[in-house]
Length: 430
Image: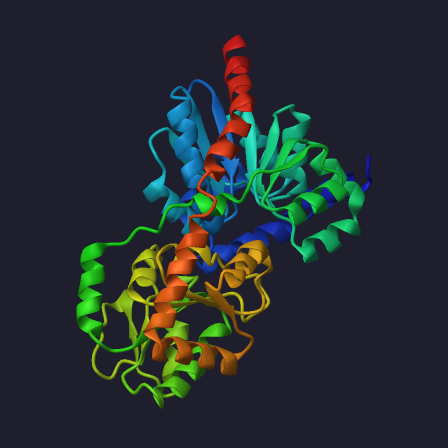
């Protein structure tokens, strides 16, 4: 066994004061749920339901949205089943509390300390654990595996950067991957990297992001915004991250010389940044209206800042052009299938390594365009605003790509069914 796992456990135990300080800072900045903070320590006020229970973990909003159709399918197939869903962010918890079906429970995932993970597992006692994408936390994985709780990786992803990093400590990653009964990778490149790092059983059944339904929208709210925008040209910058809003503001100023009535809609990934974003854009002489404050769109509005949660489906329907954030900064991008599924022409920056296969397929289908900087983004938005036919054509092609893997949910569910049947049988035998 690699010495790195005992070393990691020692450090994560001895580092309790540092971890506590870090968590207090997150609490102070609203990044932890004060009312449910004990869940991060493995303490739950929610009793474990009787009967078989499987545990599904996803890091944040993206992973949570991805597994929702799978959760629905599993509960429909196995009526006696309970599903525990964990995530690590306040925004994902809010979304899951609204959208989880009957029979599913949300909890915050415990911090990856040995004591917290053990306490979490002691309480919930899952018959099966399903982790998503790249959630490889050493204590979480190995303690679960050591308790002989079967582990499955779903929609497994391994970016080039993560692969290079794990190659430097292959013993630790191999130790974790040996805990998995099955790894279902998003694409062949992810599968090859998982195998190279020691995963014993890997399959590629497709990317579950293709099975995610269109984001919901309040249709009355959509009609209201359409009436207020009227014939004015508009475009959307969605799920933006720090540093990108200033660039979007520069794009707007450049395009305003061509389209004086242009409205740019910005939906930041983290709505709590709304006040800071509005101040920065206003300092650049842009007129900003904030949705969270109830501001109305008026004739002088430059930027409509939609600093709210769970409304992207509305704005993808509203705007014929959608730029996906987290891609002009080197952070891996956001899911471009979300606007494509709703017929919005897609743009994104060069840093899309979290969605490399999807973005490549959209580009190959002439359904999306990659931009590199403010200048190329300005030119791309200008082309689409000037040519509604081009915009609509890209939107149609994007919808075709988004609907191209409609069998993936069936395939993943079929792969999981034998493991869930065994988990249910094991529960009944105890």
